[in-house]
Amino acid sequence: MRWTIVAVGRLKERHWREAVDEYLKRMRPYRAVQVIELPDERADAGESPAQIVLAAEREGDRILSHIKPQATVVALWEQGEQISSERLAQRLLVLEQSGGGELVFVLGGSYGLAPKVLARAAWHLGLSRMTLPHQMARVVLCEQLYRAERIRRQEPYHK
Image 1 (spheres, rainbow, N blue to C red):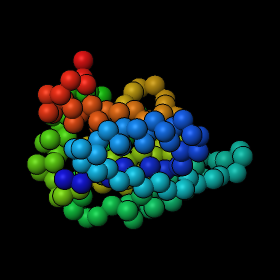
Image 2: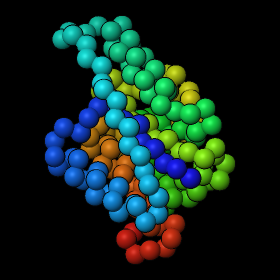
Image 3: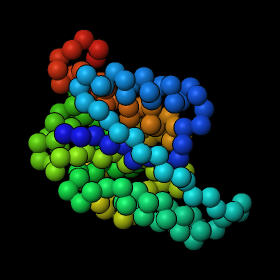
């Protein structure tokens, strides 16, 4: 099964890009993971709640335009289910077995994920109850996906 990460916002700093690239490189023996970076919406300083909702909706439209109808979607957000690495490995296997050929992980930007993106997701996954910068969330996601592959194969990375 093909895996895709759709992320709002670019990794501007070299250290974030290098960390993500390292985990993607480590995953290559198991599968290729495509990363699609989408521009984040910019609202004016002093943005109103209505402007924030509109910005999240526009980001949501862009996210959904990159998801095929048969794809299985995992939305990453702070209210999502928090699980262990071992359980993540198991859950990914179940999603792959029931999915439509592609598993898409969605990371929102600073405005979060639009309700329509959350509704499209088969599963809501939380990386932490703490707020993480989206750059760090992408690194953590990539590391955990790599760890899940190692766990599933009973290889010695996971401790």
